[in-house]
Image (cartoon, rainbow, N blue to C red; front, side):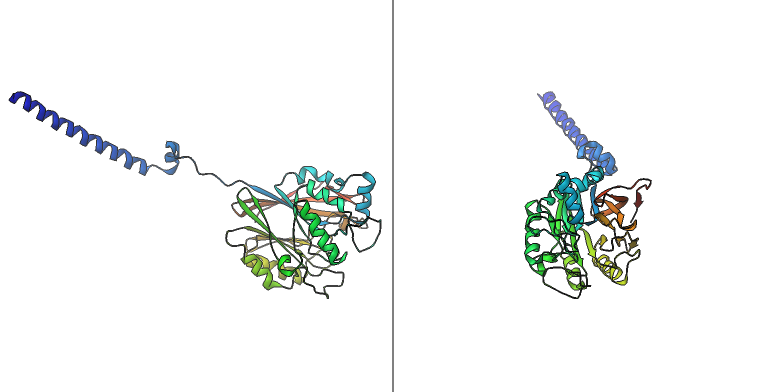
Length: 344
């Protein structure tokens, strides 16, 4: 009896010892796992962290769908005509942006050489088909068809799910950013113009965001800080048919970057102007023409399109694609000119 009792006692002690050894081994293994590099831990089964996807945004120059451009589309019975030769480039992005220089009145189109633009309503199809998800209406032709034309233009674009910036029924609407949610990243657009008529900016109105209203510019950018956004600001300013930006262009562009914009893109001069790296941002002072009928000179028949590469709200690089405008209408990649890559 004593012999069996002793055996049970020694058995209990042995079992307890085994439990203690198992506990110590488990703790050692856990501590060893904690000391592993993160890469080894992920290999052990926790899963690698996801890397944010790259986003591509294309910025185009001035787009005018009236006058000779409209006549060409109507003659060809093709509303996509102005964009077809840029198809490969335009379809390489998640979204495209440009300055729409010609409002819609809703009336039947009549061919004209007038400086008062009026695009056929159906020409909006080309913008939609080629990925222009946001356009700026802040320019000196915004009110060519009056306030009724502006209202009709805003509605016509909205019907095609194209957002607008720089114009609205009030200044609050004009300064309201357009925001795209792409691959879990917010891309925001703002726009302003030196004028909404061809009067050198003398006339003001409550419909178009203006470049001299830096307080509203700063407030609009500040509103995009939380949640964060990658901010692109369009500016319609400068002297027409000149190769260098003027003081007003530089002042507005620097103010936008200082306030938190990542990229500033310029329109209106109808010539390509230089770009500038400024405090971590990129400024394209003028991209020149994209879709236009100004075939009277080499500089007005050329332009530049920019493809931005963005990840995690940061600009990785920008591709500069030279374009040549053919037949007083339609851009195509310029031959003999390789795209330039710009790093911020």
